[in-house]
Length: 122
Length: 179
Image (cartoon, rainbow over all chains, first blue to last red; front, side, top):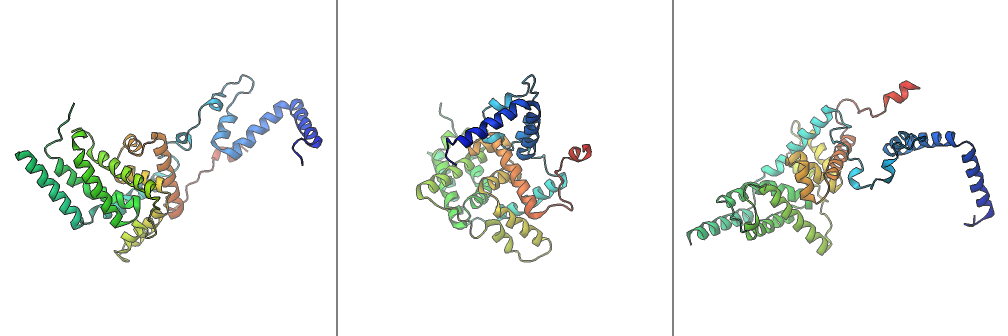
């Protein structure tokens, strides 16, 4: 359908007319639909008092990556699951930390230590 | 004001190297590349040791140098992260099928599957013991971003491993109960 089609305008007018006539119902349905579809955003929308406008502040708030799921990482997972992940992570990562250093890194550390001691003597 | 490095700077440097090397391996996914990064970090730290403030977190300072070196190199050479071998799974595979190691091998494989930024945040917080503030400063992002990445990493690991005996029920019970 062309962008400026009369059919499209008719449809838009129809939707607008419908919305104006049943505005409170549409708003309620819209909130419910958004709540189901958008999770957190929907919860914010659903909390708005449409009569007074109270709760609309979040709509004008600058949205950042930090807001996207920035809830406390402890939330959402059962404590047992968190403990299991933490324990395994430390165990697996700890094996990397515990590996012996390669000769070239040890040699470099020795050289830096010698540089340090010779620097202190002068 | 010129700040004199502490007397035990070389010892502190050496004590941090094992963690630095593990972090480097988790970043670049290749042990030889990781060792090169560690050496480059040590040389840079030594060269700029006067700018390190004694009493502050040396490990965070070294991790930041290493991370910046890695990212700079990645940008200039357009390096791909060499994670084909799967750093953690490869490490665990060395131990074979001993008791308890299969469980950790599964975890290591899941860790290798995480998005790089999520794995990095999880390691910094959960394995290296940095605070959220320190990790955010280290990664040059907001504290909330680190929290978000850690949260997603844990959730993803849970999905991959199905940690625990029961799946976590995230369905709002009130919705069902109210209807």
